[in-house]
Image 1 (cartoon, rainbow, N blue to C red):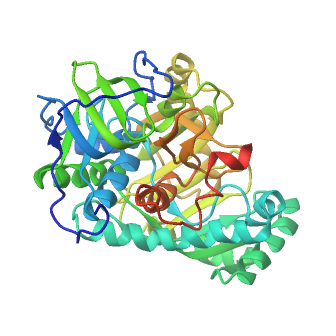
Image 2 (cartoon, rainbow, N blue to C red):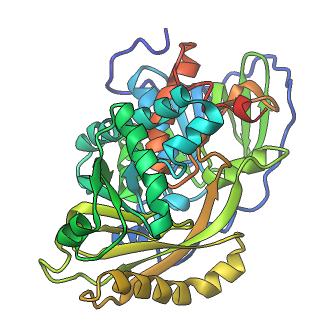
Amino acid sequence: MPGTRAAGNPPTCRPHRPPLFTAAYAVLGLTAAMDLKSGYPFWAIRNGLAAPLPRLQADLDCDVAVVGGGITGALIADELAAHGHAVAVLERRDIGWGSTSASTALLQYEIDTHLVDLARRHGEADAALAYTACVGAIEWLRERAAGLGGVSFAACSSLYYASRRRDVRGMREEFAARRRHGIEVEWWTPEDIEAGYGFRAPAALMSRQAAQVDPYRMAQRLLRRLHGNGAAVHDHEDVVELHAGARRAVLHTASGYRVRAGHVVLACGYESQRWLHRPVARNRSSYAFVSDPLPAGMLGALAGSLVWETARPYLYLRTTPDRRLLAGGEDDALDLPARRDARVPAKARKLAKRVERLFPWLALRPAFAWGGTFAETRDGLPWFGAHPQWGPRVLFAMAYGGNGITYSALGAQLLRATVERRRHPLKQLFSFAREA
């Protein structure tokens, strides 16, 4: 039975022998790929384009077809294949070349929506469940990265500082709520912040459960391992139609082949909303840059930390394995690709100036700068599972928000439980039902 096989080589998809099939839901033809990024994303420059994978040569029949070859699709496909499901992965670009190549890959349990605000919206039990699950997701990601090598996974701390004095009261409430639910977090005074990082802020929350990774290389390594073990992983395969029936779903590709599956997982990142009649998240543009490599010792505590602030949109910082400082933020309210393209240099300079106000001794020059599409939901939580428009055979994986990779780790486990008809504690909270 699916889900009972031990981890190891995934079962291969079988050539498709077309049975009688009746479509029960709508068919959607996709248009051209979205323009998801601008400028020179660091991970794409650092790693370069990987060799293409083989194109489809025949129709396929599999347990689960994953549409999307970014980090979200890679984590989901890997989790399913490791537990005995025959998986096919279809990516319209090169593997990882969409939003994954532009991700800044801060791995945090801290959701953009505070625990106390999430509790007011969904109840304290569900809010605490979301936060504590994200804590566990960091360790889950560490275990997956350990078997890959070369993905630059590193545990680090997370300093969340008050941008303004008036934010301190809310931070105290947030600190108490996290501690109440067993999350390890420290309260830092202005003196603690200055002693630890060299700048002053009214207060901060220090968490030790965070990490960072090279998301582009991790997606590549996961999917190429699957391909090497016999799974059907194909890039440059655009899905143009989806038929969902009561028992199966069928994908039609632009190359003229069909993939028939027990479930389809739409892990297309921000393009996933094209499969829905109404948007479920708001797209905006966000920007980032990395500096030239900095001398050893100049980064100080930044070398092992994520740093971000209470202001929205927020400035955030991390480092890379070769001692570059990565800074991001300066979000636009709308995602307009042409405007985003033009704004990248100016946004990078503005980000650099904001960083230098905190750390005057860092003489920063943006070496690579980029912008990209960023989406967020009203409550800061992701969407995982079936949508009423498509029925139970089509599952969405929308890991939107500032900690999208952490959400993807949870979604991989949640969607596997869904495919295997098992209960999962986050299924209702992360479902489309919460907005009904």
